[in-house]
Picture (cartoon, rainbow, N blue to C red):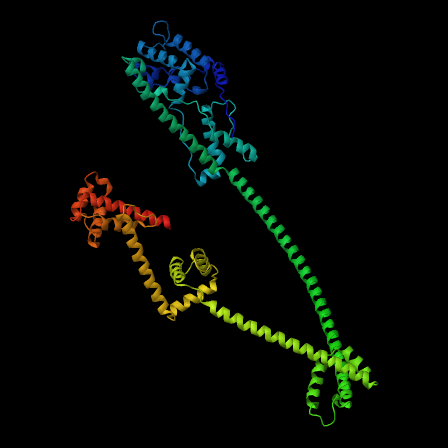
Length: 572
């Protein structure tokens, strides 16, 4: 914002400058003679003093000079010419001088000068097209109210944005010296007492503030309309919008180029990766083909060695006596041995074919070792199978590890954690492990399996047993609570609020029974019908509405219900 400083001292110095010549003074004798001294506040003081063309531009020295000239020309006793006026007209001249001879008085009259044009141009197409012609004189007229000497003017179409911003910053924060004390309806000096003077001062102050507010609103409207019609503002806004659009386009172009570079780089990386993948696949394919060829070669060699070994053993009659019954078993053993021997062992064995004893000895040792290995593997498999059966049997025995109390806990957990609960089955399993006194190794699969059985009706007897057990536990706990109350030990901490109330009602004799459904309904209706804002007589009306209960019973029942609701919310 433009920094505005008070330059009243400079203004006062300007008021002391004399710029009036006697030739500029115009005596309007007809107007002066028509004036009434009692209505001196309604007269044009500048016209009375003969300086109607100077008005606010005149200084106090100009006013004094004009007054002296008027005294010489119009004094009823001293003047000898035809400009002589009567006492009443001369009184009007004196009143005009008294008003304008001081800076404060002159400003008071200048502020309400009827010859000043307060009109504000509207926002029209004509005013926009003729902006400088329409708003220039208006701004120039209102410059006279500025407290700052060097007030920025409207300027022209060649002004830059800094000059225009300086103009509008100043005028949006315009400081006006215009005040309206001249229009005070009540004169303070006519007051008869201090209280009346205070009342007059207060009324005049409020009226001045109101007119000052209207004046500032007029100036603000002038500046706003000027701003709205200013072609320079429109041009600056278009230029700023253009620069913003260019910057946006440049940013978009830079972003597009960046994305294009990223795309090209990504395509290049994908191409390189694709080539590498193709190279890896090619190498893997070549390796697989080489391994395949090697396997085929090994299989071919194995096949040849097996055929050779088979022929060699066959030539030895399978190391059995002629017409022996063990040839078939020997042939089966040979095939088993062929499947277990490696290529090197078969080559070594075939290489000993030239020495029948060495061949027979080596064949027997290999066969025996192979049969022993097969027997050991068979024993291991049998042991594993047996262990698996035992484990399965043990698992079957332990599958149903739910005891009757745990099933009751399961039923409760299923209700506490309904469908939709996050990780419902894991949560239920954790709940069972936390509260169970028998087993603490439940998992979600155990819970799901058991719930399905209970829902399908496969364990209906067990479910009925659980329900019966729960009822027995309830009866037992109720009996225990009644015994504790009767023994004078008070109510157990384990009791819920509802059970405790029932126990107290059962123990205390002489009191009425528990609240019935109808009484509870009547109590709820009366609580709504007679709100707390009714006052002390509320509970009397509630007791009368219920009919079968006293005021004290109704208040106690209400407190009990409130405590129940609080306890329920605390558990949640």
